[in-house]
Image (cartoon, rainbow, N blue to C red):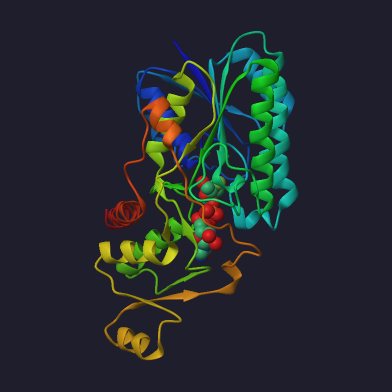
Length: 341
Ligand code: G4F
């Protein structure tokens, strides 16, 4: 039985990946943090349902190198998907040391373990568009210079560069997926897309009155998470390790994303800051007001993050199919359906 270890199995991408691998008969090992509260809602259905593959969860932590080494030496997975770590960009300004430890130093520790492992293993590292931060060019590709603008981006740039170093220096099969934002109904509620779609669904269901957001004009290249997870697998199935930008190539603003989500649920939306007369008119018609709250603004905002996935298309046959507004509509519909069931 082929086996894979997923670091970050309880997250959005980890849960989709586990689903795909188990359905294909893989033995899937997942690293789970021992915490006072269970955080396994995204994989609970996999623990209960029979699948051709087998799921084993191990208590451990990315920053606990010894336990990680022990799991790897015992289970000897052929593939490792490193998706774990503090993933919130805004929060990385509040907890920069944890962010850098989990996303940067822990990746180095993992690479060191793999360097000593006595058998060939393939590593997928979840790098991020945030390594580009404020890039000089758009769209970005694998050759674009790193220019991170937040602690999260710095840690990811450090880790991505080290994957390249270990690939070149020691022949390790290590791939960086330089993924742009990818979303789904399993996205955490503190990311803007889910905050919008869940908020819209709750408003529609009469459970919430308004939504407060930060920068409405921020633009992101938003794709559909299950498609990005499929790309991770293609990267490890390729004959040689490489880095790949995973993106849709199209950016849309937070404002446009919200408009698409609200329209999908037949809700009229008004934006705070809209001309006073227009805002008053919309409020009169029962429109939901999307408020701006400065506490959600970041000290520095990443700019013009839009990716060029030509290499993934040429070498892996991969292209994103679900883009921006479609993502918003799918998420809003799923969130409302879950509330209504
Ligand atoms: O949803 P976000 O928090 O995602 P962000 O910062 O782009 O990062 C995500 O994508 C990266 C690229 O794949 C990943 F590396 C990273 O781990 C994470 O998955 O924010 C998106 C945009 C930002 O410009 C933010 O300033 O939305 C803006 N925004 C506006 N109001 C908000 C809000 N973001 C959040 N989280 N909450 C708000 O209320």
